[in-house]
Image (spheres, rainbow, N blue to C red):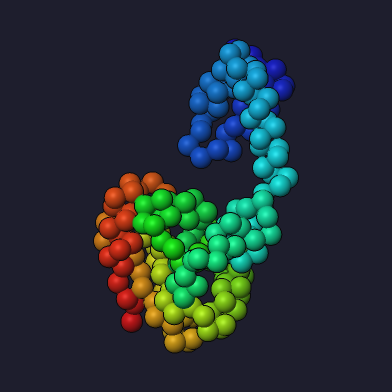
Length: 199
């Protein structure tokens, strides 16, 4: 089938999604155009609205429509516990699975010198400022168990050590090389509750 310019553009645009290859993108495009044009219109409006109005929370760096997210605005949360995660998806996963009531800091990535991602890109300067305030008593490292995730956890643990802050790491249940957002809730809850202190 010879695709028109706009159809090709739509297929290419859908390929930016994780796990969507050329065939899947073509199938989605054709479905939307043939069977659900109203759904396509709603999807386009929702995407445009999200891109224009959702940014990063000034405090924790998760996705939000406001300067400060709902979690950071919640005065009932425990300021002494700070959990470090790599992405907003992991904030959702941990809150749903563990009932964690402390605070979060979202790295939006992990240290990867080969990809040009260092402490500046992860805004570890903001984390440093937060640790220096003397409110955080325990730092919970919930980065993924990839090589980069482990290196990131080690780097942050050293930072916390300079401020005399107890540091723990989620431990068992999460497979090495696994991504937290894909781990089932029960496994994630066990890993979170069984975190261990780093020396």
